[in-house]
Length: 144
Picture 1 (cartoon, rainbow, N blue to C red):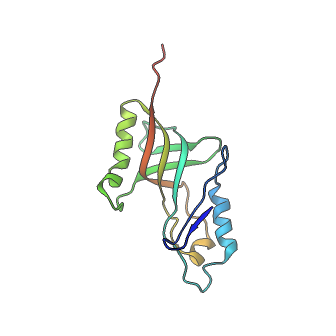
Picture 2: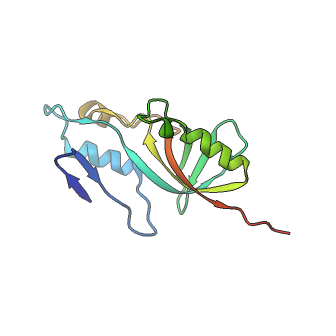
Picture 3: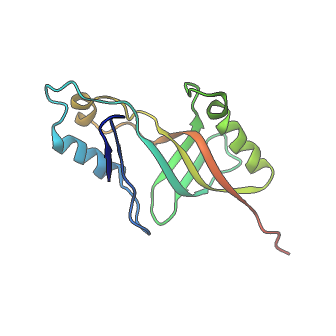
């Protein structure tokens, strides 16, 4: 875990072969009681998840996290600050159309925002949605 007081960010990474359980993360935020009377706010939660798109031809793209039962619905971040980030979801769809395999997705978890006191009272709705900012692909191997 890394705390950057100047930027007001906390960064952490799961140990190799492990995943961060968002329910447990939410519980940890609740347990800190940091929002009570402090005015602290969760601006957003950025995640990078490794795995694969499990429904590439469906209307809603679903991304399954490797080594877990966690799944996310992928979507466009129309409020992204740059045109490249705004177009990331469409580029991801285009890559899938070309037959590329999406192996990781980076983006904001929708609904993970707000005053910590209010946020920590109730888990955000499911299915969880990642608003895509970036992604990594590999070309699918041609198999006979």
